[in-house]
Image (cartoon, rainbow, N blue to C red; front, side, top):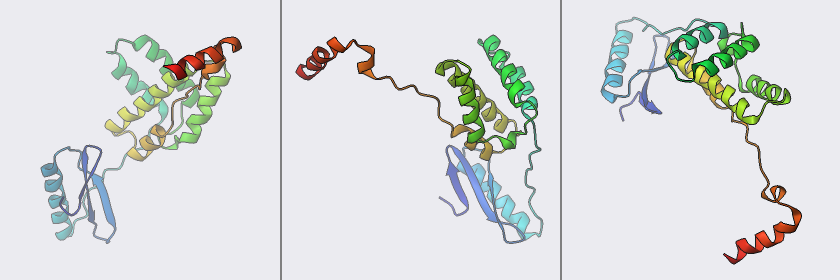
Length: 183
């Protein structure tokens, strides 16, 4: 692998020193090594000429904006009715919150809040999966940085542990365990 090019998941990234000597890391936006290499050569050439390469800055968007864009995008999905309901509920909760403010702690608190309202774990997981996918699309649409997406993806879905012995009457546990041992 060439110096200055590395791979994250399937996308190649480049890093180089800017005019001020600071290391700049940015995505090539491509899964092809040759494209990343060409971009790196172009950036290094502009540094040699004394020009600071243009760095893409993403504006600070709110949850309302991504909810609106995501609703337009999700219209073609089969489950749009239920997804629209989920998006509206999320919009009421997170409305004007900037996307950069989302953290795993905020989403874990929301997860707890959903469960305390009496919703089932499957409902909670469905809502969180929608949030995660909304942020994935927001990164694709340049509405938020990948750093925020990583914080959102870090959240695990709620798993309810089921004890096998609790689901059987006390009298049948011993014969059942003997059956397991004998087979």
